[in-house]
Image (cartoon, rainbow, N blue to C red; front, side):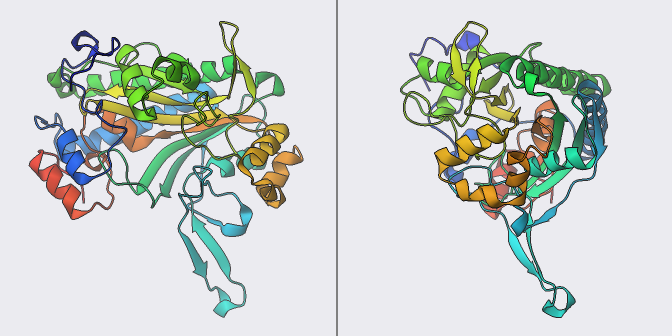
Length: 390
């Protein structure tokens, strides 16, 4: 697609190709997906080599992430009770609901209403207390989840795997500078993982793809809106990645100048409402954000991580009031935060398959993880020389 926007030019394109998703806000159909997936794709590692690489990178990232942030690996639940309020709702409009099921147990005498986790965001904060974590100490999990309400495309799966991590902190650390420092440390881990992949598997260099940049750019969602006021969110992200191939977008969830948040966020984990002070003196809102990169294989935006400083008692009440969910304050998880019974923390999730897909130069999540896909998608992948694992 041709564009007159000064921020998009062939020189700014890391692949020298036209950018595939400038035309619309996102993929909404398989007809569109077939047009988006690369037609000239050639896997640089075969399926067996890919499996070896996946586990090499998994060990490397877990070890380095724990060392960089002071974390320890811990067990994480796949299911939680519905009444606990611990499950992650992902957003605040109720559109992404967890899978819930009834456990009869003891012939129905002691039943349990259970849910499959969508993420371990809230559970991790309670776990900090359970494991007696002090500020500067934290945990990392090999989390598995099911998110049934996604449109299944090249980088969205019903099966989710993440390095879900959480780090205890002090009240003095609840600022934007601390969050940026954490993001930079995580970026060092990902850059190191890329170097490790290229060292162990030289074939990955054969595609001529650019390496990840040394630094991450930090931009508030309001700044990006100011730059592209007439474009929807995903187009704004796509265009900003032409200037900055790795960017951390701050303040996701807060209502911007156009009357909408950059993206909806649940009210009870990340703090998206607290006033924050930028390096240039501007006052913004939000102590959270998303880490995005440009994927030169798919030629599209690629989200790696969502993270943020978690709500304290004041931010929790403020955000639940904004979203009309103050009744949640009666749930055990929310009572623990309101009563200052759990550590203040920063945390996030790093997509395992998303990261491996990027570092191993893959065009589809199904090349690095096993999930369920509709036949239509599998047929499209076969026509594009993409081998989806089953």
